[in-house]
Length: 247
Image (cartoon, rainbow, N blue to C red; front, side):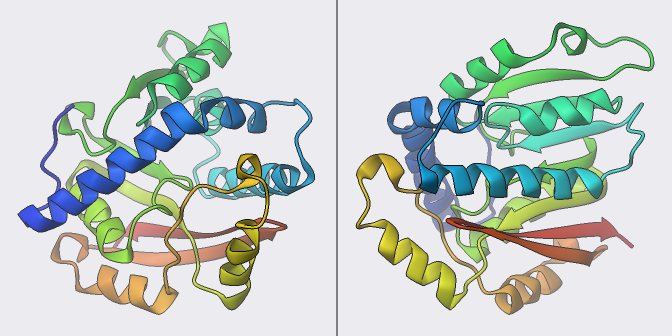
């Protein structure tokens, strides 16, 4: 899939380079570990805290979506192994779930319950894609959810992603970012002392004030405002949820 999400060539190159690094990590380096993390299989103590934190964050983001999603289209941007997409579809949504890693997308397809594989009146479904979440061919959506997929980008690139998706999102963005805190910085520094199998993927801590300032100045986001935020911190997992809705 080819996209042109940014007006600046330099910004596009930076985004594409980072996107390539993320795809390589999740599709080749960490696919097996990620499959295990998102299953019920035993994991190390460090990864157990990440699993618990991710479960809580997923519940938080889902609670910010309508309880009844029948007739709604939802983009799960960075779907991983599909847990959030499945829950949204069970509420009746037509979920378009996309991830950079073909390996994780195939695993998500394998885990998808049979009743969610095909669209039918009044029932939800999930269609999976591997590629760029900004691909315009994916269409328009009522809600866009990006759980821990923007945490790998700078604040500037994260806002550019929101700008690119804004024309195709009708109601709300629900996404997470890595908050810039002393505790998070210290934990990631300590993490380098652990075996490679226990290291978290590279993230970019973002200052909340800077992120909100950039969102407020972005012309394509002029019709949007932040409504609520919540931090989930559990062991080696720390992530900040933010909701944007149209005025």
